Image 1 (cartoon, one colour):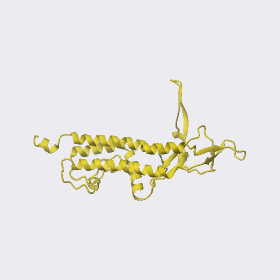
Image 2 (image 1 turned 180 degrees about the vertical axis):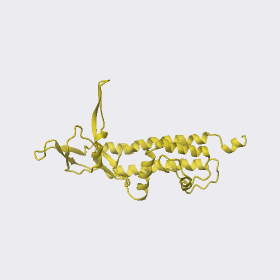
Image 3 (image 1 turned 30 degrees about the horizontal axis):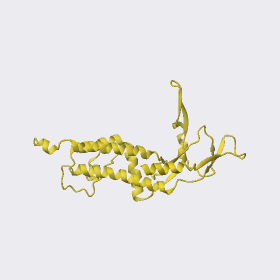
Image 4 (image 1 turned 90 degrees about the horizontal axis):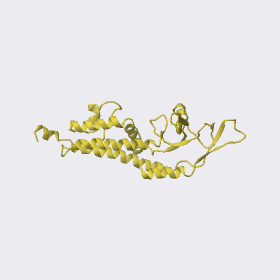
Length: 234
């Protein structure tokens, strides 16, 4: 994550784009000049981050399956992403090879899934693409921003403008002419095959946060009493 942040900051420091106004443009329009596209290093580091985050969930799941089930076959065990916003089905549990996982351990996985939605699902999409088919390429897109004024406290801040989010869906190339907004801003996006538009690269920060939360939740299952010993009065 540190290396990824440094790579993104280094790219931003090159001032890779600039607006260009000229007499041939209509009033209120601006030409965008993209001087440098995001370097391949960002995609490579991003792929490592995604793989490590996904693997950490798989390792934790293996530990929970093995906990109290010595000798369990972990060769196909993985974190069960399942279907969003619904408890894991029997088929989904079998697909993840959870075996005879203790109920309280499964409950912590379910809680991790609930708290991590939708970010864990995005991690699954990123991981499946990077691992099996394509590098996670990054693109340059216009991102809507606006000034939000807090009249009560007499302060202002620059925030995303959800009312104009459609501009993020449009690809942009060097030399394209666009309407000049009050705040002209660009971001890097991660191209995902199954998504209608790129995910802003900052989504990785949210994914990192919820994976950390998921690991903490799953770890609490290990601190709970062994159900077998509890049943035997141990």
